[in-house]
Image 1 (cartoon, helix red, strand yellow):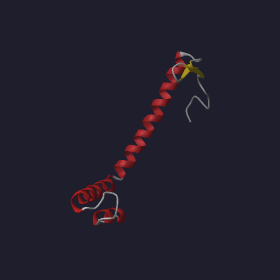
Image 2: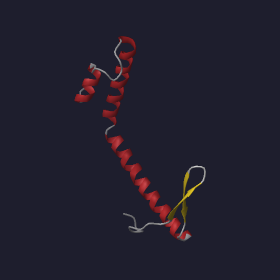
Image 3: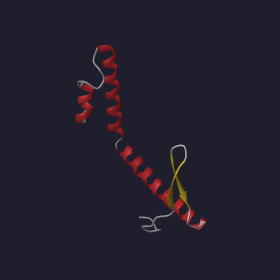
Image 4: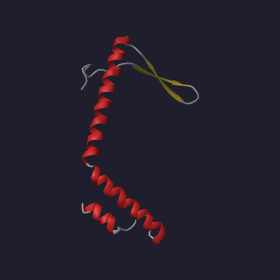
Length: 99
């Protein structure tokens, strides 16, 4: 949770004009808007760092899966096999964690 607490900022007003639009009324100060922006930036940065860490930790597995998918796609084009059907040896190895 952010330092701002469990609060809601801004009222939603629905207006119909050539379809449905939602306008927000700002009922908070510029200082509060800056705090909101900072909190959102912290949350997005933390999520980015977490995702990047997960991808970095599992890089070798991702590379094996990508290679297996490329091989399956190539086999599908040249061997009559449809990509996504059947399991080739490379896909089996990637799924089993073998090289």
